Image (cartoon, rainbow, N blue to C red; front, top):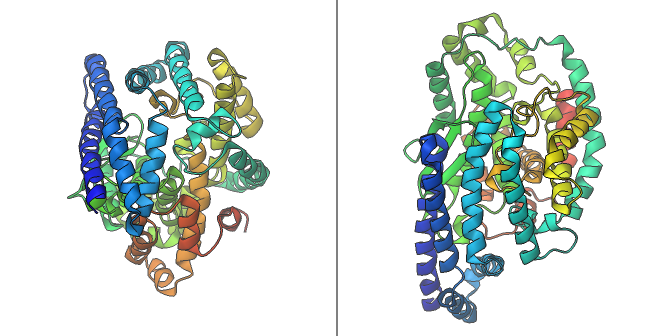
Length: 489
């Protein structure tokens, strides 16, 4: 174990630097004064370079090789993932890593301003730089089929563009059919049923009560306000959730919090004493997203959940008292085509992801110029949704991911939907979990997730973890059955 312990010491130092970078990155998204962005970008760039250097220098390489030579079975999974990360990292020059961090920091600030001003042209130069860096990284990492795979595999270990495209090609007509029927059936449900006075203070109260009730530990986390909701971990037992508020729509923030709480529960369920090791890290974004979508949709839009929570919501937001449970459930599960992904219902959500996947592939392959993104977006949106976004702020500027350098990220949302349905179906096959869930008791479900998903960290590859947790090969069948059961039956 001596060699592995020496390697672990280096990884602990890198983790400390990484958590420091995460902390000031979180501050940038929540409290940083706008005029301080340039200095924050320099700070993050410096830290990114140091983290990269610590994980790629000769000292690290020798420590890794020494640990690998010991060949201890209990460390095999960690060494497999450390080697994967090392090989990817050593492909990238430190200068590129630092530049990527700086361009991303500046890009996020530029995106926020461009979205506010509905001004894609002001963000386009930043996207050009981010795209150039993404292409350079893809070429450095290499790929089997197309550049997109090199980026995708950093988020979804082992996935290829060809495999994802095949899944999406098969899923698209099924989802499109379900979406069209769901939207048609929902026309009898008024779109404004849930709208009404919702003071932010009361939203904060309900959000916290619900997050805490399903297991989020506020001694190890908190919720703040940002332009784009997210979850980030700043260190062991320090998980930060964010949301945004609409004073006329309590559900917008609540379902955002449920989504981010799902991420947060996963982070809080990882082995904290191994946070510096792959065994203490989440395995992939497709698995991570399965946790958020499971709590947001399979739990948060269910009858048992609202049998428990509707009376409390009605206490805080009196306009809801006019709704009975069935009417309320019809409202929270109402399907309609929307311009904004984070506000989309389950029936139409994946069409948003398919659109982004197509756009990103075209950008990476050089088939689409950055200046043509708004037009291409609107054209494809019309094809998928039958309507055209009235502005770029409601179109190609709505998501933060590109400004973060997150090209290759979006497919994991739909992979997460598939995984969530499969995991939830497996959990409901256990009578004690199902019986508790029918009484709005979710702790047995959380325990199942903690044991079968969270505690495994990255010791298993995503597809292996899913197979072991559900006793089934990864498949879209549970998800399609779930959508049909909710919207078509």
